[in-house]
Length: 352
Image (cartoon, rainbow, N blue to C red; front, top):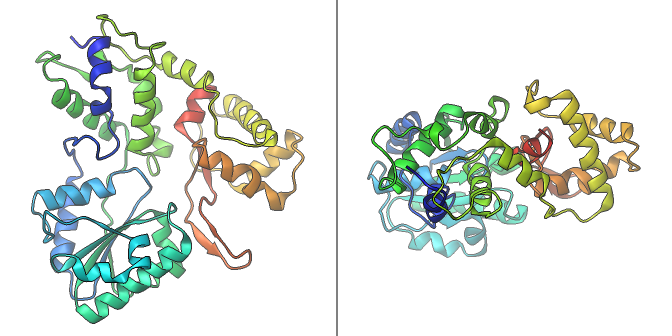
């Protein structure tokens, strides 16, 4: 039997979402096969693109392929980054093997570094005849950025985090990290409320759902003595714990009162129109959310709405952008988190 004390002791491992703990690799059989085949077929100067949302396991997949010797990249290889390549192109010459790996081509990196890094990479591939694997979020779909790399292959198979996938990962981690505490007939539902699992993996969110978002939330609740006490009671994570935790969460990284005003309007709208997320089939456009702000008598001009309200809510993990980050020539800025938006797990649970 897994007790509260056991779960708290192992929570950082079971719910890890970084390289701090080496978690076992799960699933993605289709991704593995496609990546192995396409990497083997890469010609000189060609690039394999892996473009998926942050926190969904792209780097973990590539590390797994290297560790299992499924692709021709030396095990000792440390990944390059777009920023590092932009600032020092000589780093590519020191990279071992014929296939370079460039990571973090995503919204965390300044746009000039993304462009500079990809231009330097293409120039190096032209001169060296080597190949590359480039890992990033939907920024890689931006036409201006993607056009820097002329000879591309794309990894199309990348299993999304739906309910079955999440259950498989969680079950494997409990079996791996807590094997001394579980019985032979261990079942995930004896530790986690099935309704909670449904909330953590809504069908409408699977394209942008992330292990980072799910596991950081699980860690936060388990580590709180208010919800999981350090005792020998049987561990069981209930949906009500997470609702209460998020309802009491005052640590929102919002700076302006108007952002809180809109958040309250949005919460009431979701609660009345989309209870438990039911009915959400796509994201909300900027126009739809601005109309909601007007109905709530939020005093803000349309031209300022995205930057002053939607972007801060996205940065605070209340809204999740499902659009393609692009460079806006008219405003001379990189639109990092464009519409449409879906409510995050954090927001959805807080209003349920």
